Picture 1 (cartoon, helix red, strand yellow):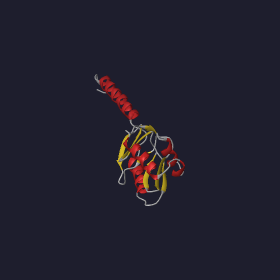
Picture 2: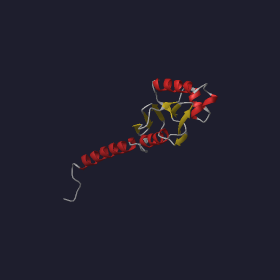
Picture 3: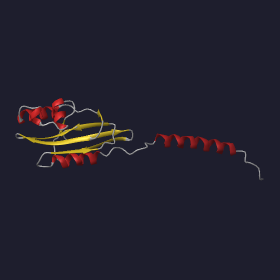
Picture 4: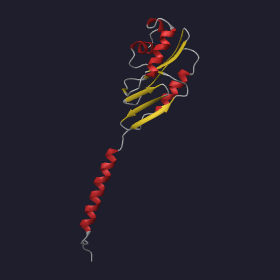
Length: 155
């Protein structure tokens, strides 16, 4: 009457399998939240909305970034998030040395002959297909107003 039931080993085996499955699910869960693309888009929008030249930086908690004229995508181990810009289009500066230099603080006149040349380069950059790039350091946003050209560079 007080002995172990005959089917107790079935119960033990079932609980063991369930425990192993639960540990596997818990190990697969991400340890960090997905990156906050909406916060980054807000920084870009605040900089793009100004009427004067401005620069801003936003720290990134992502491994990869994709900047498009109308939005941004961020990706890390926990997932991928996207956000659109309210003020745009913006110009992705990555991959074009002259735009990257201006984004990082070089005067536009040191890289371009005129405001038209800057606007042409920005237009060409907006037409390129965007791709995922490694996120190294903070996101930099620079709103440039120079010789009739008004662009917002992001990189």
